[in-house]
Image 1 (cartoon, rainbow, N blue to C red):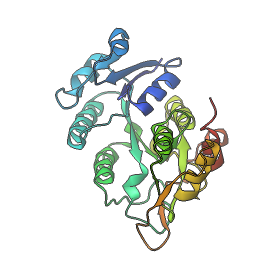
Image 2 (image 1 turned 60 degrees about the horizontal axis):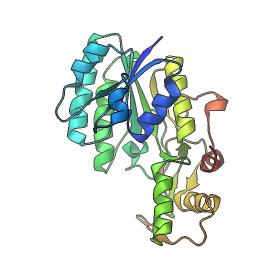
Image 3 (image 1 turned 45 degrees about the vertical axis):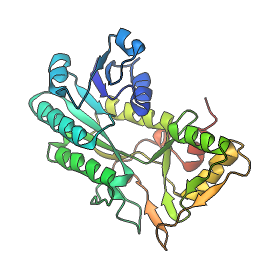
Image 4 (image 1 turned 90 degrees about the vertical axis):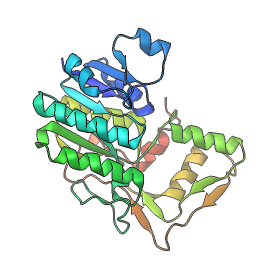
Length: 271
């Protein structure tokens, strides 16, 4: 049974992935803040990337697969990933790095595919690119880069934020000329499960196979949630349509693991 370590397993994506994998693999996770549940669970280890060297845990646990779902200080993340990379170079292990559509946020005239050149104007995007570039210097079998667009689903932070803003009668920011794709947390964890189970390698774009305007997506989600007459604050960051979408082309997953915008919207009320 493959031994997997999810760094950031107490976070939203990391925890959903832990629940997806735990019945099938020897799965471990890290958490940051004191929590009685994780302290009692012998498969969780407390880890503070700003104070501790992740190599110590890796050498003790010897995971075959490391999944990076950690959040926090960008400089600390870069340092932690450099240590992970040095460790997997010397050990029979690979890293699955959860990246973002933001690595392409400079390119606005077309959607982005797996092996397009990355370029970002945002601090977040540039930090993701820095780790991606370090991984791409490794042999391909040593890594998976999973680029992820906006994530939705019944209990996701984005949906909770939408409901909170609506309840407060506050405005919901939308981008009428930004064209995106999206995913659901349930489909994302299934896709990562497949990638791990089939020992896939390289770069994957884990978003819906179709595109939608950000404003239209949020409107449809509000309709699905039966939020009547929400207040939208329309933000125009350019005069023309702008793409922020990661579409799969080179590394296509099986049909049953692909998703559409409609399925993403439907996932919001599905248990």
